[in-house]
Length: 243
Ligand SMILES: Cc1cc2nc3c(=O)[nH]c(=O)nc-3n(C[C@H](O)[C@H](O)[C@H](O)COP(=O)(O)O)c2cc1C
Image 1 (cartoon, protein in one colour):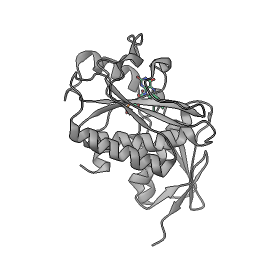
Image 2 (image 1 turned 60 degrees about the vertical axis):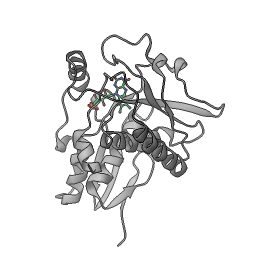
Image 3 (image 1 turned 135 degrees about the horizontal axis):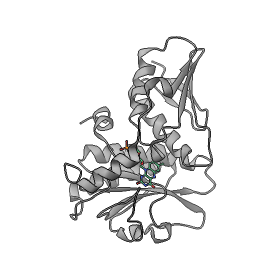
């Protein structure tokens, strides 16, 4: 499975099987985490046995079942791009986990932060977590009901961008992958712009989880467009790779 296929397959999964992840899955995940931490300056941690963080959160939206493990997205409090990087690199790990046949779900609110079993230094902040683990192939009835509650409608491609001219195929391929990206309460708040040949992405409310959504959406755009990368920051620009 490649990353584009993983984008197609991924859905938030909130009910996990009791068994731990396989040693081969753990080895692969740990090596990816180390690689992304070196690249980003984040301190992402895999908490293998962390069910405590979900005690007390068992009603309504965000109801999880059987969570054992999660990725704690930790970084320096002083890092001005902490939330966006958590989104970008966390979603890289989500797609790797999907390739390994594991289920994942981003969790910003519906877990107990005080019971998160990650190591936090004084100068660090826990941005949010991603549950990860073995899942049944088909969603159990209760999980499916919560999924429908959380997912709501998906925006059309046209609602995800503005353009001052007909857009090239690579831009549209990027937007198609953005349409499938996870976002907090599925708001899909990231708006892409194609103006005078320049591409940039923005969110309106940078004080919420929308900066995490921004990092996730930028990664999906890059993977779909396949010809460049974004600079960090709200309203960051896209640069096309030089051949
Ligand atoms: C930044 C962020 C925070 C989220 N927080 C929660 C949460 O607290 N609880 C929860 O159940 N789902 C949470 N989600 C998952 C979203 O509800 C889910 O991604 C969205 O409904 C789209 O569904 P999909 O991931 O299956 O495409 C969060 C997602 C993101 C990106």
